[in-house]
Length: 110
Image: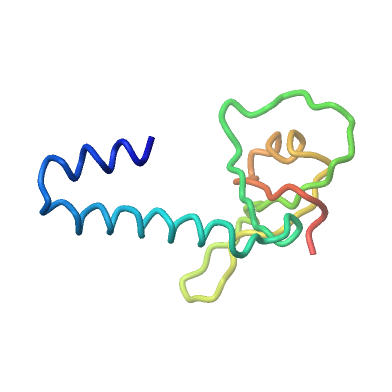
């Protein structure tokens, strides 16, 4: 399929050759970058935002998540963290708390 595309593209104008070469090199570079370094799942920081409406009832399962919870502190000068990392039993129980912004799955807070 790529061969057919390239052949048709070059038949339109020989001046398209630099564009075609750039297109192919860009494709190869993106594939090389994607396949190179994969971060292990336990090292990723996937922050999932809690959606509205918030859950009212959750199951009693233990799949711990680390949630970002508003601690109510407001400062005039920095640094002054306004959130705390809090471990919840699961994503549902984390998002049921209205002070939680979001969570990171995969275990307790460190």
